Length: 241
Length: 264
Image (cartoon, each protein chain N blue to C red):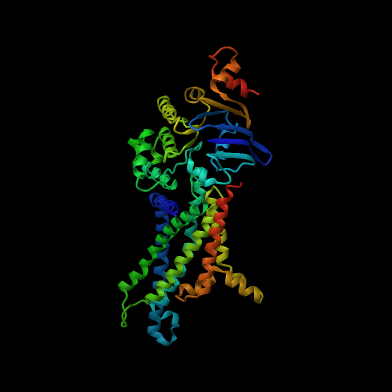
Protein backbone atom coordinates (compact mmCIF):
# COMPACT_ATOMS: atom_id res chain seq x y z
CA UNK A 1 0.00 0.00 0.00
CA UNK A 2 2.78 2.40 0.90
CA UNK A 3 6.16 2.13 -0.72
CA UNK A 4 9.12 4.32 0.07
CA UNK A 5 12.39 4.17 -1.81
CA UNK A 6 15.47 6.14 -0.94
CA UNK A 7 13.39 9.00 0.40
CA UNK A 8 15.57 11.98 1.28
CA UNK A 9 14.83 15.50 2.43
CA UNK A 10 17.50 18.15 2.78
CA UNK A 11 17.17 21.74 3.84
CA UNK A 12 20.22 23.40 2.34
CA UNK A 13 23.04 21.56 4.08
CA UNK A 14 20.95 20.08 6.89
CA UNK A 15 19.66 16.59 6.29
CA UNK A 16 16.24 15.86 7.77
CA UNK A 17 15.77 12.33 6.47
CA UNK A 18 18.13 10.32 4.33
CA UNK A 19 17.66 7.23 2.22
CA UNK A 20 14.51 5.87 3.83
CA UNK A 21 13.34 2.52 2.46
CA UNK A 22 10.27 0.74 3.73
CA UNK A 23 6.90 -0.54 2.68
CA UNK A 24 3.64 -1.09 4.45
CA UNK A 25 1.25 -3.79 3.26
CA UNK A 26 -2.47 -3.28 3.08
CA UNK A 27 -4.18 -3.48 6.45
CA UNK A 28 -0.91 -3.33 8.36
CA UNK A 29 -0.08 -0.99 11.20
CA UNK A 30 3.45 0.36 11.21
CA UNK A 31 4.82 1.93 14.36
CA UNK A 32 7.12 4.78 13.54
CA UNK A 33 9.56 5.52 16.31
CA UNK A 34 12.43 7.85 16.95
CA UNK A 35 13.65 10.48 19.36
CA UNK A 36 12.46 14.05 18.94
CA UNK A 37 13.95 15.63 15.84
CA UNK A 38 14.74 12.30 14.21
CA UNK A 39 12.68 13.12 11.13
CA UNK A 40 9.38 11.37 11.92
CA UNK A 41 7.19 14.36 11.17
CA UNK A 42 9.20 15.26 8.09
CA UNK A 43 8.73 11.74 6.72
CA UNK A 44 5.00 12.01 7.28
CA UNK A 45 4.88 15.38 5.55
CA UNK A 46 6.70 13.84 2.61
CA UNK A 47 4.25 10.93 2.48
CA UNK A 48 1.22 13.20 2.49
CA UNK A 49 2.62 15.46 -0.20
CA UNK A 50 2.88 18.52 2.02
CA UNK A 51 6.63 18.69 1.40
CA UNK A 52 8.42 17.61 -1.75
CA UNK A 53 11.28 15.10 -1.34
CA UNK A 54 14.80 16.13 -2.35
CA UNK A 55 15.37 12.63 -3.67
CA UNK A 56 13.62 9.31 -3.80
CA UNK A 57 10.09 8.16 -4.38
CA UNK A 58 7.08 7.61 -2.17
CA UNK A 59 4.09 5.73 -3.51
CA UNK A 60 0.68 5.32 -1.95
CA UNK A 61 -1.68 2.76 -3.49
CA UNK A 62 0.57 2.74 -6.53
CA UNK A 63 0.44 6.50 -7.09
CA UNK A 64 3.54 8.63 -6.86
CA UNK A 65 3.03 11.26 -4.17
CA UNK A 66 4.82 13.92 -6.16
CA UNK A 67 3.48 13.11 -9.63
CA UNK A 68 -0.15 12.42 -8.78
CA UNK A 69 -0.75 14.27 -5.55
CA UNK A 70 -4.54 14.44 -5.83
CA UNK A 71 -4.91 10.66 -6.23
CA UNK A 72 -2.73 10.16 -3.17
CA UNK A 73 -4.42 12.83 -1.07
CA UNK A 74 -7.81 11.31 -1.80
CA UNK A 75 -6.64 8.09 -0.16
CA UNK A 76 -4.92 9.49 2.92
CA UNK A 77 -6.30 10.64 6.23
CA UNK A 78 -3.62 12.68 7.94
CA UNK A 79 -3.24 13.94 11.46
CA UNK A 80 -0.26 16.36 11.55
CA UNK A 81 1.73 16.82 14.73
CA UNK A 82 -0.24 19.99 15.52
CA UNK A 83 -3.89 19.18 14.89
CA UNK A 84 -4.96 21.57 12.10
CA UNK A 85 -7.95 23.19 13.78
CA UNK A 86 -9.73 26.49 13.27
CA UNK A 87 -10.24 27.72 16.84
CA UNK A 88 -13.24 29.89 15.92
CA UNK A 89 -15.30 27.05 14.47
CA UNK A 90 -17.55 24.58 16.24
CA UNK A 91 -16.56 20.92 16.16
CA UNK A 92 -19.44 20.00 13.86
CA UNK A 93 -18.82 23.00 11.59
CA UNK A 94 -15.16 22.09 11.35
CA UNK A 95 -15.79 18.44 10.57
CA UNK A 96 -18.32 19.36 7.91
CA UNK A 97 -15.80 21.72 6.37
CA UNK A 98 -13.11 19.04 6.24
CA UNK A 99 -15.64 16.56 4.82
CA UNK A 100 -16.45 18.93 1.97
CA UNK A 101 -12.72 19.57 1.42
CA UNK A 102 -12.36 15.83 0.98
CA UNK A 103 -15.18 15.98 -1.54
CA UNK A 104 -17.53 13.70 0.37
CA UNK A 105 -20.99 13.70 -1.16
CA UNK A 106 -23.35 16.22 0.40
CA UNK A 107 -26.06 13.72 1.27
CA UNK A 108 -24.13 11.36 3.50
CA UNK A 109 -22.05 14.16 4.95
CA UNK A 110 -23.96 14.68 8.17
CA UNK A 111 -24.09 10.94 8.88
CA UNK A 112 -20.36 10.62 8.23
CA UNK A 113 -19.58 13.49 10.60
CA UNK A 114 -21.71 11.81 13.24
CA UNK A 115 -20.02 8.47 12.64
CA UNK A 116 -16.48 9.75 13.22
CA UNK A 117 -17.73 11.89 16.09
CA UNK A 118 -19.07 8.83 17.87
CA UNK A 119 -15.97 6.82 17.01
CA UNK A 120 -13.68 9.39 18.63
CA UNK A 121 -16.03 10.18 21.54
CA UNK A 122 -16.90 13.69 20.46
CA UNK A 123 -20.69 13.36 20.50
CA UNK A 124 -21.06 15.54 23.58
CA UNK A 125 -18.97 18.43 22.29
CA UNK A 126 -20.16 18.62 18.70
CA UNK A 127 -21.74 22.05 19.13
CA UNK A 128 -18.88 23.61 21.07
CA UNK A 129 -16.34 26.07 19.76
CA UNK A 130 -12.96 24.39 19.29
CA UNK A 131 -10.90 27.00 21.15
CA UNK A 132 -12.83 26.26 24.35
CA UNK A 133 -12.10 22.54 24.27
CA UNK A 134 -9.46 20.81 26.39
CA UNK A 135 -6.28 19.60 24.74
CA UNK A 136 -7.50 16.01 24.74
CA UNK A 137 -10.68 16.92 22.90
CA UNK A 138 -8.77 19.03 20.40
CA UNK A 139 -6.52 16.08 19.68
CA UNK A 140 -9.57 13.88 19.18
CA UNK A 141 -11.10 16.39 16.77
CA UNK A 142 -7.83 16.10 14.86
CA UNK A 143 -8.14 12.31 14.76
CA UNK A 144 -11.81 12.53 13.75
CA UNK A 145 -10.85 14.80 10.87
CA UNK A 146 -8.35 12.21 9.59
CA UNK A 147 -10.95 9.44 9.76
CA UNK A 148 -13.58 11.33 7.75
CA UNK A 149 -14.52 9.44 4.61
CA UNK A 150 -12.64 6.38 5.95
CA UNK A 151 -9.59 6.71 3.68
CA UNK A 152 -7.67 3.47 3.07
CA UNK A 153 -4.45 4.96 4.45
CA UNK A 154 -4.09 6.75 7.77
CA UNK A 155 -1.02 8.70 8.71
CA UNK A 156 -1.14 9.71 12.33
CA UNK A 157 1.57 11.87 13.83
CA UNK A 158 1.53 11.28 17.59
CA UNK A 159 -2.21 10.69 17.86
CA UNK A 160 -2.18 10.17 21.63
CA UNK A 161 -0.28 13.35 22.41
CA UNK A 162 -1.98 15.33 25.15
CA UNK A 163 -4.47 12.66 26.12
CA UNK A 164 -4.89 11.30 29.62
CA UNK A 165 -4.27 7.57 30.24
CA UNK A 166 -7.93 6.58 29.81
CA UNK A 167 -8.29 8.49 26.58
CA UNK A 168 -5.00 7.08 25.40
CA UNK A 169 -6.29 3.57 25.92
CA UNK A 170 -9.42 4.48 23.99
CA UNK A 171 -7.49 5.87 21.06
CA UNK A 172 -5.24 2.82 21.08
CA UNK A 173 -8.27 0.56 20.94
CA UNK A 174 -9.66 2.69 18.14
CA UNK A 175 -6.47 2.40 16.10
CA UNK A 176 -6.24 -1.30 16.76
CA UNK A 177 -9.78 -1.64 15.46
CA UNK A 178 -8.71 0.06 12.24
CA UNK A 179 -6.18 -2.68 11.42
CA UNK A 180 -7.21 -4.84 8.52
CA UNK A 181 -9.51 -2.21 7.06
CA UNK A 182 -6.97 0.59 6.95
CA UNK A 183 -3.26 0.81 6.44
CA UNK A 184 -1.86 2.87 9.28
CA UNK A 185 1.42 4.61 9.98
CA UNK A 186 1.56 5.72 13.54
CA UNK A 187 4.32 7.81 15.00
CA UNK A 188 4.85 8.06 18.69
CA UNK A 189 7.47 8.16 21.34
CA UNK A 190 5.34 6.35 23.86
CA UNK A 191 6.76 2.90 23.48
CA UNK A 192 4.13 0.69 25.13
CA UNK A 193 1.75 2.12 22.58
CA UNK A 194 3.67 0.48 19.79
CA UNK A 195 3.91 -2.85 21.56
CA UNK A 196 0.17 -2.83 21.99
CA UNK A 197 -0.98 -1.68 18.56
CA UNK A 198 1.62 -2.41 15.94
CA UNK A 199 2.98 -5.54 14.32
CA UNK A 200 5.91 -3.87 12.67
CA UNK A 201 8.19 -1.08 13.78
CA UNK A 202 10.46 1.33 12.06
CA UNK A 203 12.93 3.18 14.25
CA UNK A 204 14.74 6.16 12.85
CA UNK A 205 17.47 8.26 14.35
CA UNK A 206 18.98 11.40 12.88
CA UNK A 207 17.10 10.86 9.65
CA UNK A 208 18.24 7.28 9.07
CA UNK A 209 16.59 3.94 9.60
CA UNK A 210 18.20 2.08 12.49
CA UNK A 211 15.72 -0.76 12.73
CA UNK A 212 12.89 -1.97 10.58
CA UNK A 213 11.37 -5.28 11.46
CA UNK A 214 8.64 -7.30 12.97
CA UNK A 215 8.26 -6.41 16.61
CA UNK A 216 8.88 -9.93 17.86
CA UNK A 217 11.88 -10.51 15.64
CA UNK A 218 13.33 -7.23 16.78
CA UNK A 219 12.99 -8.27 20.40
CA UNK A 220 14.66 -11.57 19.64
CA UNK A 221 17.51 -9.99 17.72
CA UNK A 222 18.35 -7.55 20.46
CA UNK A 223 17.57 -9.61 23.47
CA UNK A 224 19.36 -12.79 22.64
CA UNK A 225 17.11 -15.63 23.69
CA UNK A 226 14.88 -13.60 25.98
CA UNK A 227 11.47 -12.83 24.51
CA UNK A 228 10.63 -10.33 27.18
CA UNK A 229 13.12 -7.63 26.27
CA UNK A 230 11.20 -4.39 26.28
CA UNK A 231 10.99 -2.17 23.27
CA UNK A 232 12.27 0.59 25.49
CA UNK A 233 15.64 -1.08 25.90
CA UNK A 234 15.94 -1.67 22.19
CA UNK A 235 14.99 1.89 21.46
CA UNK A 236 17.53 3.36 23.85
CA UNK A 237 20.22 1.02 22.57
CA UNK A 238 19.56 1.88 18.92
CA UNK A 239 19.20 5.59 19.26
CA UNK A 240 22.10 6.11 21.64
CA UNK A 241 24.63 6.53 18.86
CA UNK B 1 -15.49 24.15 -7.64
CA UNK B 2 -17.59 22.81 -4.77
CA UNK B 3 -14.50 22.78 -2.56
CA UNK B 4 -13.73 26.39 -3.50
CA UNK B 5 -17.20 27.34 -2.33
CA UNK B 6 -16.70 25.36 0.87
CA UNK B 7 -13.49 27.31 1.52
CA UNK B 8 -15.23 30.62 0.76
CA UNK B 9 -18.03 29.74 3.17
CA UNK B 10 -15.51 28.83 5.86
CA UNK B 11 -13.68 32.14 5.37
CA UNK B 12 -16.91 34.09 5.72
CA UNK B 13 -18.02 32.17 8.79
CA UNK B 14 -14.67 32.91 10.44
CA UNK B 15 -14.82 36.60 9.48
CA UNK B 16 -18.27 36.93 10.95
CA UNK B 17 -17.70 34.95 14.14
CA UNK B 18 -14.64 36.92 15.20
CA UNK B 19 -14.85 40.55 16.35
CA UNK B 20 -12.30 41.49 13.72
CA UNK B 21 -14.68 42.11 10.83
CA UNK B 22 -17.02 44.07 13.08
CA UNK B 23 -14.16 46.31 14.19
CA UNK B 24 -13.43 46.98 10.52
CA UNK B 25 -17.10 47.69 9.79
CA UNK B 26 -17.22 50.12 12.69
CA UNK B 27 -14.07 51.87 11.52
CA UNK B 28 -15.49 52.14 8.02
CA UNK B 29 -18.78 53.59 9.25
CA UNK B 30 -17.15 56.00 11.70
CA UNK B 31 -14.68 57.38 9.17
CA UNK B 32 -17.23 57.49 6.37
CA UNK B 33 -19.70 59.36 8.59
CA UNK B 34 -17.00 61.85 9.50
CA UNK B 35 -16.28 62.62 5.84
CA UNK B 36 -19.94 62.56 4.90
CA UNK B 37 -20.91 65.14 7.49
CA UNK B 38 -17.96 67.31 6.51
CA UNK B 39 -18.94 67.20 2.84
CA UNK B 40 -22.57 67.94 3.59
CA UNK B 41 -21.53 70.86 5.69
CA UNK B 42 -19.30 72.27 2.92
CA UNK B 43 -22.06 71.81 0.39
CA UNK B 44 -24.55 73.66 2.56
CA UNK B 45 -22.05 76.43 3.13
CA UNK B 46 -21.39 77.02 -0.58
CA UNK B 47 -25.10 76.95 -1.30
CA UNK B 48 -25.65 79.69 1.25
CA UNK B 49 -22.82 81.74 -0.20
CA UNK B 50 -24.29 81.30 -3.66
CA UNK B 51 -27.69 82.43 -2.49
CA UNK B 52 -26.14 85.71 -1.33
CA UNK B 53 -23.64 86.38 -4.10
CA UNK B 54 -25.52 84.96 -7.06
CA UNK B 55 -25.76 81.42 -8.47
CA UNK B 56 -23.58 82.19 -11.46
CA UNK B 57 -20.49 82.25 -9.31
CA UNK B 58 -21.11 78.66 -8.17
CA UNK B 59 -18.79 76.17 -9.88
CA UNK B 60 -20.77 73.47 -11.73
CA UNK B 61 -19.48 70.61 -9.59
CA UNK B 62 -21.06 72.28 -6.57
CA UNK B 63 -24.54 72.70 -7.97
CA UNK B 64 -26.14 69.41 -6.99
CA UNK B 65 -25.81 66.78 -4.29
CA UNK B 66 -24.51 64.13 -6.67
CA UNK B 67 -21.47 66.07 -7.81
CA UNK B 68 -21.15 68.15 -4.68
CA UNK B 69 -21.40 65.43 -2.05
CA UNK B 70 -21.53 61.89 -3.42
CA UNK B 71 -18.59 62.02 -5.85
CA UNK B 72 -16.15 63.44 -3.28
CA UNK B 73 -17.67 61.05 -0.74
CA UNK B 74 -16.82 58.02 -2.88
CA UNK B 75 -13.27 59.36 -3.13
CA UNK B 76 -13.06 59.49 0.66
CA UNK B 77 -14.42 55.95 0.94
CA UNK B 78 -11.81 54.87 -1.57
CA UNK B 79 -9.07 56.20 0.72
CA UNK B 80 -10.68 54.57 3.77
CA UNK B 81 -10.82 51.28 1.86
CA UNK B 82 -7.12 51.57 1.15
CA UNK B 83 -6.57 51.65 4.89
CA UNK B 84 -9.04 48.99 6.04
CA UNK B 85 -8.74 46.38 3.26
CA UNK B 86 -5.26 45.22 4.36
CA UNK B 87 -6.72 44.39 7.77
CA UNK B 88 -9.25 42.13 6.10
CA UNK B 89 -6.93 40.48 3.61
CA UNK B 90 -3.96 39.91 5.93
CA UNK B 91 -5.36 36.79 7.57
CA UNK B 92 -6.33 34.92 4.39
CA UNK B 93 -3.16 32.84 4.12
CA UNK B 94 -0.92 34.09 6.93
CA UNK B 95 -3.32 32.82 9.58
CA UNK B 96 -3.53 29.37 8.00
CA UNK B 97 0.24 29.14 7.99
CA UNK B 98 0.61 30.26 11.58
CA UNK B 99 -2.21 27.94 12.76
CA UNK B 100 -0.76 25.00 10.83
CA UNK B 101 -4.12 24.59 9.11
CA UNK B 102 -2.39 25.27 5.82
CA UNK B 103 -1.19 21.69 6.16
CA UNK B 104 -4.82 20.55 6.17
CA UNK B 105 -5.60 22.45 2.98
CA UNK B 106 -2.46 21.23 1.27
CA UNK B 107 -2.94 17.57 2.19
CA UNK B 108 -6.65 17.50 1.30
CA UNK B 109 -7.54 16.49 -2.25
CA UNK B 110 -7.91 20.11 -3.29
CA UNK B 111 -6.12 21.84 -6.14
CA UNK B 112 -4.24 25.09 -5.40
CA UNK B 113 -6.58 26.92 -7.82
CA UNK B 114 -9.55 25.99 -5.69
CA UNK B 115 -7.81 27.15 -2.53
CA UNK B 116 -6.96 30.52 -4.07
CA UNK B 117 -10.39 31.05 -5.59
CA UNK B 118 -12.17 30.00 -2.43
CA UNK B 119 -10.07 32.33 -0.33
CA UNK B 120 -10.57 35.19 -2.75
CA UNK B 121 -14.33 34.69 -2.88
CA UNK B 122 -14.42 34.80 0.92
CA UNK B 123 -12.35 37.99 0.85
CA UNK B 124 -14.66 39.52 -1.75
CA UNK B 125 -17.63 38.69 0.44
CA UNK B 126 -16.25 40.56 3.41
CA UNK B 127 -15.04 43.61 1.47
CA UNK B 128 -18.39 43.83 -0.30
CA UNK B 129 -20.11 43.80 3.06
CA UNK B 130 -17.80 46.53 4.33
CA UNK B 131 -18.44 48.69 1.29
CA UNK B 132 -22.10 47.72 1.26
CA UNK B 133 -22.50 49.67 4.48
CA UNK B 134 -21.61 52.90 2.69
CA UNK B 135 -24.60 52.69 0.34
CA UNK B 136 -26.51 53.83 3.41
CA UNK B 137 -25.32 57.40 2.90
CA UNK B 138 -26.82 58.10 -0.53
CA UNK B 139 -30.00 56.36 0.64
CA UNK B 140 -30.10 58.74 3.61
CA UNK B 141 -29.61 61.69 1.28
CA UNK B 142 -32.46 60.64 -0.95
CA UNK B 143 -34.72 60.29 2.08
CA UNK B 144 -34.01 63.67 3.56
CA UNK B 145 -33.12 65.72 0.53
CA UNK B 146 -35.67 66.92 -1.94
CA UNK B 147 -35.69 68.84 -5.20
CA UNK B 148 -38.28 70.21 -7.57
CA UNK B 149 -37.29 67.89 -10.40
CA UNK B 150 -38.01 64.67 -8.49
CA UNK B 151 -35.08 62.66 -7.18
CA UNK B 152 -32.39 64.56 -5.39
CA UNK B 153 -29.58 62.28 -6.60
CA UNK B 154 -28.68 61.05 -10.02
CA UNK B 155 -28.76 57.42 -9.02
CA UNK B 156 -27.08 56.30 -12.22
CA UNK B 157 -23.97 58.33 -11.45
CA UNK B 158 -24.00 57.36 -7.78
CA UNK B 159 -24.30 53.64 -8.50
CA UNK B 160 -21.62 53.67 -11.19
CA UNK B 161 -19.32 55.38 -8.72
CA UNK B 162 -20.22 52.72 -6.18
CA UNK B 163 -19.44 50.01 -8.71
CA UNK B 164 -16.01 51.59 -9.19
CA UNK B 165 -15.56 51.46 -5.45
CA UNK B 166 -16.38 47.75 -5.35
CA UNK B 167 -13.87 47.15 -8.13
CA UNK B 168 -11.29 49.02 -6.09
CA UNK B 169 -12.12 46.93 -2.99
CA UNK B 170 -11.73 43.75 -5.05
CA UNK B 171 -8.34 44.98 -6.25
CA UNK B 172 -7.14 45.73 -2.71
CA UNK B 173 -8.21 42.27 -1.55
CA UNK B 174 -6.47 40.53 -4.44
CA UNK B 175 -3.18 42.31 -3.77
CA UNK B 176 -3.56 41.79 -0.03
CA UNK B 177 -4.26 38.10 -0.48
CA UNK B 178 -1.14 37.60 -2.56
CA UNK B 179 1.02 39.36 0.02
CA UNK B 180 -0.60 37.24 2.71
CA UNK B 181 0.69 34.07 1.03
CA UNK B 182 4.25 35.28 1.54
CA UNK B 183 4.37 35.36 5.31
CA UNK B 184 3.17 33.68 8.48
CA UNK B 185 2.67 36.98 10.23
CA UNK B 186 -0.60 38.81 9.68
CA UNK B 187 0.99 42.07 10.76
CA UNK B 188 3.70 41.77 8.13
CA UNK B 189 1.07 40.91 5.52
CA UNK B 190 -0.96 44.02 6.40
CA UNK B 191 2.10 46.29 6.37
CA UNK B 192 3.28 44.92 3.04
CA UNK B 193 -0.16 45.51 1.60
CA UNK B 194 -0.05 49.14 2.72
CA UNK B 195 3.43 49.50 1.38
CA UNK B 196 2.21 48.38 -2.02
CA UNK B 197 -1.21 50.02 -2.17
CA UNK B 198 -0.34 53.46 -0.87
CA UNK B 199 2.56 54.38 -3.21
CA UNK B 200 0.72 52.76 -6.11
CA UNK B 201 -2.27 54.97 -5.44
CA UNK B 202 -0.18 58.12 -5.10
CA UNK B 203 1.97 57.31 -8.11
CA UNK B 204 0.40 60.22 -9.97
CA UNK B 205 2.37 62.63 -7.78
CA UNK B 206 5.54 61.44 -9.50
CA UNK B 207 4.13 62.24 -12.91
CA UNK B 208 4.45 66.00 -12.40
CA UNK B 209 8.22 65.99 -12.59
CA UNK B 210 8.48 63.37 -15.36
CA UNK B 211 9.06 63.80 -19.09
CA UNK B 212 6.25 63.05 -21.51
CA UNK B 213 6.28 59.35 -22.37
CA UNK B 214 6.98 58.44 -18.76
CA UNK B 215 4.42 60.85 -17.54
CA UNK B 216 1.52 59.19 -19.37
CA UNK B 217 2.68 55.75 -18.32
CA UNK B 218 2.92 56.72 -14.67
CA UNK B 219 -0.46 58.38 -14.75
CA UNK B 220 -1.97 55.37 -16.46
CA UNK B 221 -0.58 53.03 -13.81
CA UNK B 222 -1.71 55.10 -10.85
CA UNK B 223 -4.77 53.74 -9.03
CA UNK B 224 -5.83 57.24 -8.16
CA UNK B 225 -5.87 58.51 -11.73
CA UNK B 226 -7.66 55.38 -12.93
CA UNK B 227 -10.35 55.71 -10.30
CA UNK B 228 -11.06 59.41 -10.77
CA UNK B 229 -13.34 58.89 -13.77
CA UNK B 230 -14.98 55.76 -12.44
CA UNK B 231 -15.96 57.33 -9.14
CA UNK B 232 -17.54 60.21 -11.04
CA UNK B 233 -19.66 57.70 -12.88
CA UNK B 234 -17.70 57.81 -16.11
CA UNK B 235 -17.16 54.26 -17.35
CA UNK B 236 -14.03 53.76 -19.39
CA UNK B 237 -13.25 50.31 -20.72
CA UNK B 238 -9.52 50.95 -20.29
CA UNK B 239 -9.98 51.46 -16.56
CA UNK B 240 -11.99 48.31 -16.16
CA UNK B 241 -9.42 46.31 -18.09
CA UNK B 242 -6.70 47.83 -15.94
CA UNK B 243 -8.29 46.78 -12.65
CA UNK B 244 -9.22 43.32 -13.87
CA UNK B 245 -5.63 42.82 -15.03
CA UNK B 246 -4.32 43.77 -11.60
CA UNK B 247 -6.78 41.38 -9.93
CA UNK B 248 -6.01 38.48 -12.25
CA UNK B 249 -2.29 39.07 -11.98
CA UNK B 250 -2.54 38.98 -8.17
CA UNK B 251 -4.58 35.76 -8.28
CA UNK B 252 -2.03 34.15 -10.57
CA UNK B 253 0.77 35.18 -8.23
CA UNK B 254 -1.16 33.80 -5.23
CA UNK B 255 -1.63 30.55 -7.08
CA UNK B 256 2.10 30.41 -7.79
CA UNK B 257 2.87 31.04 -4.15
CA UNK B 258 0.54 28.25 -2.99
CA UNK B 259 1.83 25.90 -5.65
CA UNK B 260 5.41 26.71 -4.61
CA UNK B 261 4.79 24.87 -1.35
CA UNK B 262 4.95 21.67 -3.38
CA UNK B 263 8.44 22.52 -4.60
CA UNK B 264 9.97 24.22 -1.60
